[in-house]
Every structure is written in C-alpha cells, then in structure tokens.
Image (cartoon, rainbow over the protein chains, first blue to last red):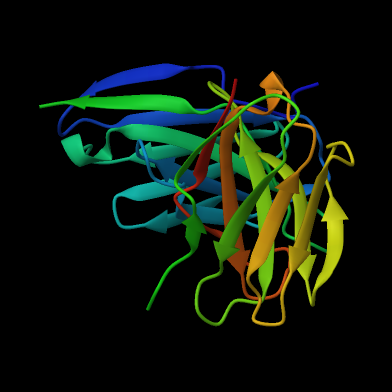
Amino acid sequence: DQQVKQNSPSLSVQEGRISILNCDYTNSMFDYFLWYKKYPAEGPTFLISISSIKDKNEDGRFTVFLNKSAKHLSLHIVPSQPGDSAVYFCAVVYGGATNKLIFGTGTLLAVQP
Amino acid sequence: DAGVTQSPTHLIKTRGQQVTLRCSPKSGHDTVSWYQQALGQGPQFIFQYYEEEERQRGNFPDRFSGHQFPNYSSELNVNALWLGDSALYLCASSLIAGVQETQYFGPGTRLLVL
C-alpha cells in the first residue's frame, strides 16, 4: 500500500518555463515533507522541506506548497534550467520520534534547452 | 567537509552468499539510516542506528542486519542473498534523529545478485 504517491513518472518542460511536480500522501499523521533530487550514479540530494504548520516554503527558484486538507504536496521550479533534469522524490516523515523517510516513486524531469 | 561515503560502489554476488556494505557519515553526524532502492522505485527504509543501537526498523527480514561503530560509521549485512536483493543500497546520515533533521545521502552501493 503506497503511502506516498507521485503519479507522473515523467515530465518534460522547456527551459525558462515553470516545472510543477506533484505528490499525494495518505496519512494525516505525516508532519514533515521533503523533496530530494537524484542524478544518475549519485545519492539523493536534499532540495527543500516544509513543516505541516506551513502551507508554503520558498528557497530561490524552488517553492514547495502543502495542501493538508487534500493531502497534496507540490514542488514548483521557476525558471527551469537544463541542470534541473533529474529524478525528483517526494518524501515524508511520520510524526514520531525519528526522521525515518517514506519516499514516493519519483518523477523524472527533463528540461529541454 | 566530507559528505557521506559508501563502499564499495558496485558489487556482484551469487544467491545464498552474504554481503557487507559500509558507510561513513557526514562529519559531525551521529545517526545513520540505510535504504534500499529497487529499480523504478523510491528508496525504502531498512533501519536506523543511533548510539550504536538499532533505533527503528522497516519491513525487512532478519537477513538484513547492521552495526554502528563508536566513530558513527555503519555496516549493513545481508545474509542468504536472493535475486530480489539486487538494488541500490543508500546510506544517509543526520545530526541526531529528530523529526526535522535533514538526512544526507551517500552515492550508494549497487548490488547485483546472480
């Protein structure tokens, strides 16, 4: 039973345009949400996070939005650059004592020059 | 400042064999977690070590075991390998294991079981 879902396996965007990656989760007990980026032959790299007490967090070109009532998370990248081409994973932390991560299946973003 | 390092980078084993993977955490970090990433899937949590103790465990059989050393480095051992264990094994470290402590990942060890 998939607790964190990324329903789009891939996304293609033109350079300079906005990339929107989506993530849905099932458990309202999740209280911390993260996005990681992964290039081939490398480990996931932390991008941005958001606590359940917020609905938006921004860091440069990256903004994460959280809609708790819909159990939906999105990552906006503006403007998109060819170097952003990678697999993006949504991850959540269960509201417990540790930072154990539960990952989605990932979305492959391709930014076309 | 060295990040998380893992060894070896690649490994080929046959069914029934045993394997040991190694991880050195980012400088200053004391908590190590291990994840398994199968092809086309997101990483899945195996277990987490803090103060040389297994703190939490995911849904993996007892064939998967680990250890954390006093210098915070860690090993993942898998016994009686089978084909389904072929995956990328990722180690992540953080400063303590608080809910909002970001985990930093190493490059992984790619294991192929034949």
